[in-house]
Image (cartoon, rainbow, N blue to C red):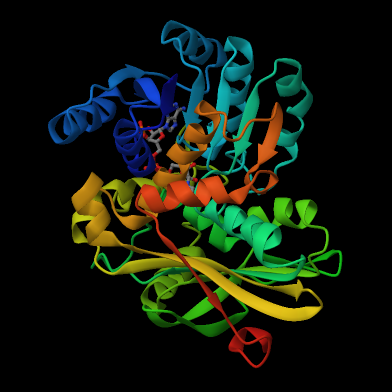
Length: 406
Ligand code: NDP
């Protein structure tokens, strides 16, 4: 059994802590720490009432490497699950190296002042983790995370090699607000407002933000316009599966969401650069926007509908061209009834816990900094079924689909 320290008490932290408590035969002690301790205490109280499991709580500023290393040591934690913000990734990795703990996160490092989605600075810590026989598992959410595992499953069990990969992320849920983001607004909006980018024949090709879209019929959910964006898992997947000739990522947005986003962009409200709002007082418009938008953790009770996220892969099996679609559908209200959070937090928090469980049980273990697709997909897929995220596989025609026309 392992001791688990979870850092971050937002929507994802709530789900990951609930799910860890449901797997308490693997996690001996569970500690939830965050910047605001009262948020940890509220989650721990709900878990005690619903599951009868004790979760300890602590206050931590995860940017403080020494304080975090001390917390890891004081709580005797073997694994740290980072579900705070991507800004804290490097500091928490350093604290793990200092205190001798394994590391898991769900999003690649970002600097607060620039939106750069890349693994470079985290991969650079590979030799330090190897030297200490520790493992860092990067991107154990849904996308990145489960999408990497689905792709690995296709490569390991369905195809001899993958030729094209399309990741399709549809949130067909409605929270009833004119505009709100389903996870941290700052991280969400930075992702969408950057230039789109996809991989083709060994090169990265850029497009203007949200300028390419097509309509896809998401099984059991319906048809939604899906926009081409850059998403971080494309970087590791094209590196780890060099047979891939083209890799793209698409996400759905409602017209209502896009109108509001464009208006906010047009007036500069999504800018990251801090501006002086009164003498000596600077604030980034994006940070201010985050404060006035609904807290994503509060959307749970009002969000209805489903999320639908999956991968479409084509390639060859025994010389014959094949195409598969592997996906999950998650119902917002089912997730809320179970753990008190909507699906965007649920589909991230469940795989985050499973990533920690893979390390705790040594089902996945290799010293160094690793991405999800570097391991056998099957045990992780088994855990998804067991922990509330069942998946489906469909074989699709190899040509003539809308996805072939863009
Ligand atoms: P929230 O903003 O709801 O929660 C973040 C939590 O981290 C808050 O409790 C916050 O504290 C805490 N925190 C922030 N800074 C610090 C710090 N310096 N030290 C300690 N705690 C800190 O975010 P979400 O729960 O929606 O998202 C969590 C993570 O999951 C993000 O990194 C996000 O990018 C990732 N994600 C990944 C997805 C995937 O599929 N891979 C999908 C969705 C999200 P406070 O309450 O005081 O602000």
